[in-house]
Amino acid sequence: MSEWNAVPSRDTVPVLMYHSISEGTGPTCIAPQEFQRQMAILEETGYKVVSLSELGEWTRGSRDLPPRCAVLTFDDGFLDFATTAFPELQRRKWPATVFLPVGHVGGTDCWESTRLGAKARRLMDWSTVADLAAEGVDFGAHGVTHRDLSRLRGDELADEVLRPKTMIEERLSRPVTSFAAPFGRSDVPVNDLVRQHYRQAVGTELALTRSRSDPYAIPRIEMWYFREPRRWTALLGGTRESFSRPGGSCGVSAGCRSSTFAEPN
Image (tube, rainbow, N blue to C red; front, side, top):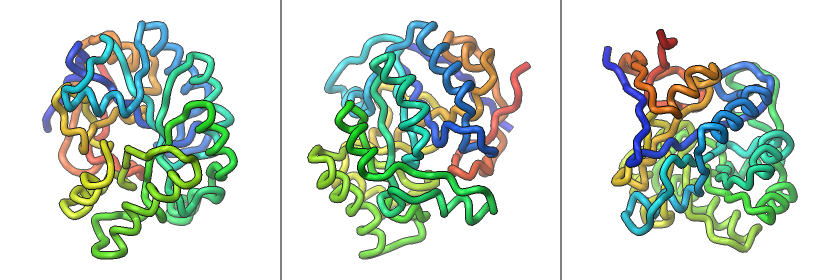
């Protein structure tokens, strides 16, 4: 067993990963009151929020970022982003990137609910996506069917990586520069395609992004692990806390490639 010490510094940026902001069960859900509390703590501790594209340029050394900043990302395009999360961000004028599995826009998270036998959760439709884009929300690609891309090859893989970019750009008339592999699962062929067509990509490795991190493997902080306010405040405040990190998968359905945190002492 190893330990991960979460200590932000001027040379690191937490990129936050969310899915559904709802009362649902499981690690892809954050209750609305918990999300509101996390945003309030982020604001109260003096953090600024920058865009994912700005972070990507920072990792390339082509721009500076303000001290104590964070990035907000939301996977899957749940409708509750529009109804619950966005008002919190809009009030603070904070940017965010939402990753869309374009084949499911206007539908449900059937890839998850079918597997778990859980109640399906609604995703945004294209009209809602367009309305949010007009308000400044950034949309990135998250595949077409939300399949594990590391299991695909050839035209099937190319379609999953490239079609989302084309579809979103045609709908919104703006460039799509960011990609998130479903379940965080990727490999060399996936990475090669993403590097050819996007400016940055996020993963699910649990770590802080550094100024020279690979812009195509940006780590993120899974916020389900920071529902406890003391833990979230400690991370943002730079308090050194050690969390157990045993090998193997964390079992999070979102595909987290790092392991679950132990509760802090």
